[in-house]
Length: 534
Image: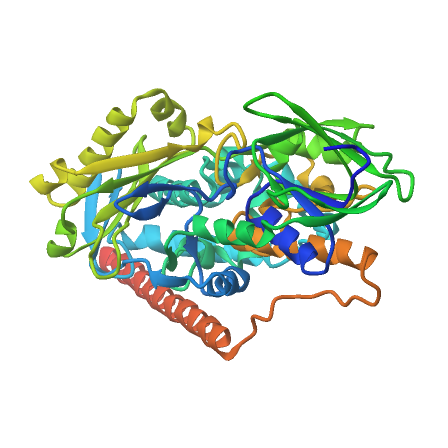
């Protein structure tokens, strides 16, 4: 590509945020080019084909209050189906297996009460935060100086309660509580609407799956961009390329932009990861949608402001290996199990039923997460398969059918050089997140930033990726379209309002149940005290 070709905008990253941004710009007749380092689009959504179906090995679930992703699913002519939850769940903690069908696991009323109080406390603190201005909260410096583990140790008495909290954090962030700034955790839960919405299946972030796979959403978005673009060069106007507006296998390694000078063009240097052939592109605006830890590896001339570089250098990805193990039948459903397993061991932390609603395509989805991933990443796929079989076997009544799966696949995201982990970036304590957070999404000259980490709604999720695309396109489009009114998703429909009301009802019901149990427990303690005195 000749440098005389000038794009209106170049987007770095072909994940959901990058592709959605490009489509929004393209719809306003803005010439856009997407540069993606991998040989396919999707970013942190990805899939593996098995038995004529695309199985998600990246981001997968969607919730009822994630309005943008639900809209996109409809636009792509796809549909959702509920995550299987009928039947007994399995929890293993402290070496004890609990199998239960009730709302609350039978680990002990005192543990449940303590955990519920902690959840209320976290939500209370999170609600005090302004996600667009974290430093305005007078307690932000303190909560940024301690890890979530520090806070847990200060506020939780029972060790079993601590373990159950750790499992929950591990499932959401793919890292241990000690690696997370307490302020970062609070801002994360604030963006998702509360702890319950982030952790629950029904009414929460794991309620539904995308039929055909969530990775297919990126494929559909990319197809909308695959047509020639009208570009401007020194000799006039011409149409660029037969491959349209996406360049795969294109790793951006350098960005040159005098961000202190208005209307300065941006020079983007990339190389083909297969042939090492270098290409150079000129553009008026640039959108970086790749994860902050990967964006930090790019050479910037001149260097970006310190607040941006300090923050991105402090961020890293969670660690996760996602697996799917296939069987000939949903034998666990015959035994009355839902397929959900929660484990406090040093290997697999969570499992869900991966089958379809009608029981077809029988499978279990599971995760190796956090620091435990480092050990299991060094082991073979066969060894990880054996571990999955062992966990499933003992969880579901030692049924011998667990020992004979017909297939196993997994994806080790720690070995993905374009994310170096999954599924979202995290930050530890004492990294000035409270004062540097805004630099994640604040434009620098004509360089703009998107990606799920920059979102203030459902940060870390596919929904967050789409919200960031909406925001960044609203920053750029007015530069080209006069009298443009920023657009937002039209998601406040009666259906979504009804779902939101249902979620609120579920939360109220849970609160009533827990309050009743708390009162019962208090009366139990008082009764015992008086009995002992007698």
